[in-house]
Image (cartoon, rainbow, N blue to C red):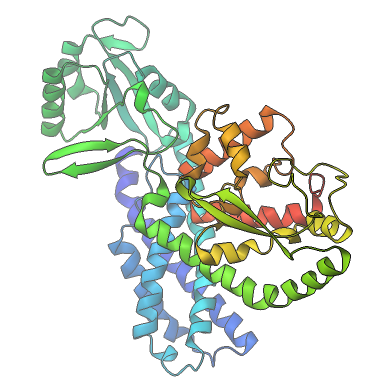
Length: 456
């Protein structure tokens, strides 16, 4: 089932994806008709739309679900295809030309397609992984040279059966174990009979020998991959920069260094924060301001210097929840803190004191999701105690973050809490995705409703 599956899967995927898109379009049409957002179109009118989808999906080769791809990669591919599809639909689909509220129709169409097509493609991805985990649709692989990080790769093949990589063993002059098939010279004699698909080369192999292995692979249509050394086995994907004919590895590049990712995150921040400002802050600020003024003298807002992106200082806004005091910047709020006012206690318990930070988002100092900003004195203390602490300032700080929804919010009582925060922030920065942000926002709502233990 190795070769035959690779031949027929693209056709199976394309046909089933076409049917799934047609069902999704009909569901979107039904929703629009039920809500009165569309005059309606017959089944035949949706066939051209599915053809649009089929063409775009085929041109983008969405059927190529990589063996080691995670589900978020499949969903990112879907979003790009959907963007092209919606543009083509808005321009070319005739039933939409007469609509008076085209943007609502396109929005419903897009959301329905994301949910249904996303579910379908992830389901196909899951089936593909399970099929490979049972020993089907495999690729034969060997490692030339044992040592360094190559045993770790062999362990990955053994554990992750769902990758569908059948590890046949090592070729190495020094190693002597049950997985060693022979010396490196034996490789060239045995390889033609092994029906190889992949050759992995250990990082310390002699350059002349590496070239010989690559030349052999080219002549026999076998893919070659280099195994990076231990210093490059980091917590994220590596990327490359090209200087003429010379390549270098970008060791500490993060997803938000990519202009498209940065633009998407900033656009979402502006739209979301703008809606919150118009529909909530416009009446919440005057209302809360009255209660704050009635209880104690002082300003409505508590403005505190905090470190933002690249350690740049900015004025972080909060509703004032304490009586004015000289320790606001240096002493954290504790349970039953006498400085906290009655209205302040309510604001802090409900997290409404953080709402003005949506204005910080509009100003460009913060993001909706990101590492929570600490006070400047706290940063100065923690950066001398926690390794890689300052790396959390590579991106804009957030109103909420991964650490907060994982239980590390509120007062920092011991070093374990701050180390855990930094570790989660570091993971977020290096593994950012739009879906990760959405998951954190949903989890934040759950925490606000059901988990108020550390809110004081």
